[in-house]
Amino acid sequence: MQMTWMIVNELMLYDANVRKYMIKQAMQKVQDMLKGRIPIRGSYYYMTNDPIAFMEHAVGKPVRGVLEQNQAFMNRKHGTHALFRSPLTIFNEVAKLEFIKVHNAYLRHLDNVIVLNCHDLTLIRLGLADVDGDTALCTNDSTILAAVIEAPTIINEDDKKVADPVPNDTDSIVKMELKSLHNLTGRCTNVNTFFQNLALEEGNLQSRVLENSVLKFLQGQIIDATKNGRDVEIPYVLDKFVYKLPYFFRFINGGTEDEYQRIIKSPFNKFCVEAEKYIKTTFQLKDGKLDQSMLGIESTKQLLQDLSKVSQSKYLAYLDLIEPLYKEYNKKKNRIDYRRQQFNELKKWERGDETRKVISEEYANLKAEYKTKCEAICPFPSVLASVAVEIAYNKYGTHGFAWLFIDGLLENLKRHENIVKKEVRRVNRLTNQAVEGNGLTVRDGVASVDDLEFRFDALDGVYPLFEIMGQFYISFETERKVNVQTSDTPTLLDGSSTRQKLEGYKLGFSTLKQSQDESQAVADELAGKKMMIRINGNYVNVIDSNGDTKCCIPSDNLIQREEKWSLFDFDGAMIEFVSIEKVTKSSFKAIVNID
Image 1 (tube, helix red, strand yellow):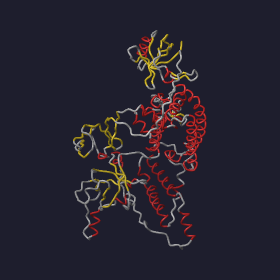
Image 2 (cartoon, helix red, strand yellow):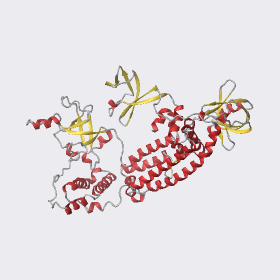
Image 3 (cartoon, one colour):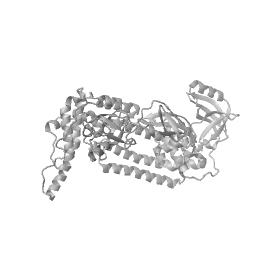
Image 4 (cartoon, helix red, strand yellow):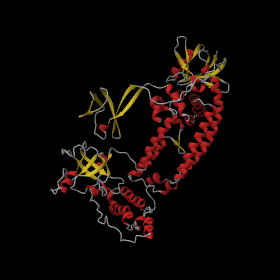
C-alpha cells in the first residue's frame, strides 16, 4: 500500500508517515542481520544426484555419470561455488564445487536444480541430504569461498539404527510423546554456537573442532530420536560450560547486556556491536523511539488535502468538532503503545502470542472506533481526510491519525498525481550473473549486456542497469495514471466566506531561496509595495501585477482557527507589505495589510 502512494506522486517519499514505514523496514533489515540473517549474493536451489549415473546403475552399466569428483552442474552457472544448507552447524558441512558446462541432451536445460556428481561425499557433507526436496544455498561470494575449510566429512555410522522394541500400548506412546517435548535441539545448537564463537575468539575456527564435531553428531541424533526412540543427552561437561551465551544471542532472545558474554573478539560479536551503534546514530533513536525530526524532510500536507470541495467556514467548523476526538484517540493509543513497549522488552520466550494478538486487536478496534466517530460527524471522505491532515500534520505533528482515513487521503492525492512515472523493472535473466556493464541495450526485442544476449520485451533503447543483492533492474520514464479506485466526495461549497480586512497583521512568507542574501533581496523588493494574493490549489502565492510569483505563504499560516478566517478565501485580495521583520535563509516575516 505504501508503494501506491509513491507511484501516484513520488513526493510522497518525503511524507513523514511513509518515511517512518520505510525507516522501520530498513531498521528491520539491520536487526535481522543482528540475528544472523545476513544477505549475500546467492540463491537456494533444489539438489539432485546425477540422473545419468542413476540410469546407468538401473540398466546394469558401469556407473560414470556426466560429472567427475568435485564437479556440479546447473545451466547458466560456471566456476567455483560453495554449497551449504541451513542451519549450518559446523564448518565441514560446506561443499566447494566446480560448476561445468554439460552438453548432455537430458540435462543441459536444467537451470533451477543443482546436479551433483556420484564420485564424492558431497551429499553426506551437506547434512545427509537425501534429495527429496532438499535445498542448498549456492554462492560464489569471494569472501565465503576464501573462508571454506577443507575438512573430513563427519559420517554417522549409527544412522537409521533404532531403539529396542517396546510394547505397543498407551504407556509406551505417552513416554514417546513426552520424550519429544524436550528443547534439546535448540540447546544443542546454542552450545555448539558457543564453542564456535569461542574458537573464533581464539583466532582459529578449528581450535574447537572436537566440541563442534561431538555436538554436530549429537544434533543429528536428537533430531532422529523422535523417530527412532533412542535416548540422547548433551554431555554434562559441555553443557555446564555454557553459563552465558555469546553477546549476539541478545538480539534473538532479548534481555540485558549483563546476561550475555560481553567479549567482542569474534567477528559476529564485533559486527553486532557496530550495528547497534549504526542503528542508534543513523536512525537517531531516543529512548528506543525514532527522533521525529528526521521525518520532516518536506511537507506533504498539501498533497493530502483538497480544500476546493468545501467552504472554509464549514472546514473550520469540522476542525473544531474533530480535534477533541483526535485528543481522545491519541490518549488511548498512548496507553496501548506503552503496553506494546513493555511487551517488546520481554525476552523471546516470555512474549505470549495471545498477548501480542490482544495488543494488535486493541489497535485495530481503536482505529475502527474513532474512524466511525469521525465519519459520523463528517461523512465526506475527502473533506474528513483534509481535516485530519490539518490537525495531525499541521497542528500536532503526529501524522498517524490522518491515516485512519485512507480513502479520502488517496482521493486527495490522486488530484495531485504526477503523470510522468519513473518505472523500475527487474531483469530476471540476469539474476546472480556476473555483469560488468551498467547499461542494457534493447533492439527488436533482444537485450544485450557484456557478451550476453536474451529475449526481453521492452522498447528499443539503452536503459540504466543497476544491481541490488544479485537482482538486476532497469529504470525508465513513462506517462501513465495509476489505476486505483478512490472515493468520490461531492462539493460542499455553500457560498460562505471567512474573508475579512486585516490591518497591521504579522505573517510569515517563504521565498523558496537558498541563501539569506537572496531572501533579503526578495523582502527588500516587496517592502512598502502592494501585491495580490492568488490561490493555486492548496497553495497561497503572492504575485505582482505581471502575474509573477514573488513568494508564498507557508501552510501553517494559512488558517487561523481562533480568528475564524482562512487565506483560501482571500483569492484576489490586495496585500500591502508595511514593514519587513526577520529575514532567514528561505523566509521572512512582515507586517501586512490585507484588503
